[in-house]
Length: 306
Length: 306
Image (cartoon, rainbow over the protein chains, first blue to last red):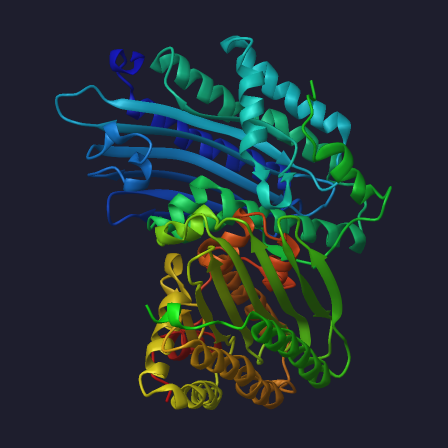
């Protein structure tokens, strides 16, 4: 395994993650122009802790959460070693930044980004480590040019790492963010990767930095373009309704959320991803040929945007 | 096993369930006095179907769903035979009524009730069957007399079936409706039972009828007593916030919901239990000594109410 020949630099990764969190918060605050992030530092009894930053009641963002955590444990949790039995009994560290943004204006899509690093160690053995991450977009009212822009940024940041990187992680994203019980994608996708440890630490780390740093280039122009579109109760009701899909995905299918909640993670930080206000309606379906139905027919489909 | 000596009467059970659904809907409509139930009949490709009844925008009830389903399959689902390998490969039928009520007035508690019957058959073998069910109450603002009334009805309906029935099913309810990632009960409990097949079919069926019929005696007087209490934005906001706990329990922990969603059940009927409007707020905790904090300190605790 290639991993055994690399010495990962945890200090470097942590430093990047903390700077990334700062940078994300600053840029989002600047765009919002009204509200600021509140910072919550917390510790975890079993080891490690984090810094949760949340902005609420902004001018542009109804709720934005940017969470950093660095946790450690003396022994890998059972759920994490089920498909990697060779790691059982190892000590571990997991660190990452994850972000979810719920804008006010229904014409601005919700977005999610995450980068993470995991390392499992055992005395006398080489460490096993990997990176994961990605970002994806969940529009309420779709715009083709936004979808193309989003995926172009994703593709371009992947390009230096190989021609196959974007198609592979684009597909992984489509597969992962799929709401099986609705037979419906969560949004228009983006990038998703996990278990990344080849060809070497530096390349994986560089790629993860490119993903983390690329997010704002993908998202902010879309926010700028859509944040001042006039909207009314109709759009708001549809946005609140569609947010329930987000809740359903995160609580029923998202492995990270479920693992966190079931393994004693910090609930408030994990559920920072929940929308501020959500609506369920029995048997709703959009009027044929309405702007709402266009979301389903033209955006919530598997499609190559670039 | 006792079950092998009894011949369950499916027709009788189904008849009871359909009448129960009708009765529940009628009584709830009458109390609401404004809105009526809409009926949706549906069929399931793999076998069976159901009747979903939902009332929305009532005067008293913001949303009430009463669902009947009777589904069948040629072979028990893997998830259902994991802990009962002797049933693998059997054909099965499952039928039940389940109900969730989300009132408008935050002083009226949310409530849930369910009765169900399951039978697994194989040619040349006696059928294996069992009943399950119960009801539980989720107040936003607690009233001791309501909690006592609720549990008194529960206890009294159990009494004819033995002294140990109420304590056993009351505890089972407390254990089941517990939100582990919040370390918090969903509400003040009630009754919960499953795998009931002793001493014989008639007794189990009688008990299940007592539970189904008992629900309204437990719930309606509480609704009557609280539905006209004046409330404002403060109470509404707390209610919306607390409803997020209901969503979290149902989507993360409730076996019935998860089994349904993951096994291709009818999503809209399963998620009829979702509240119409829900709020999440990062890091909320009620003011000390406020009416909101009393919910946590005096009601969301394990307690013998009668």
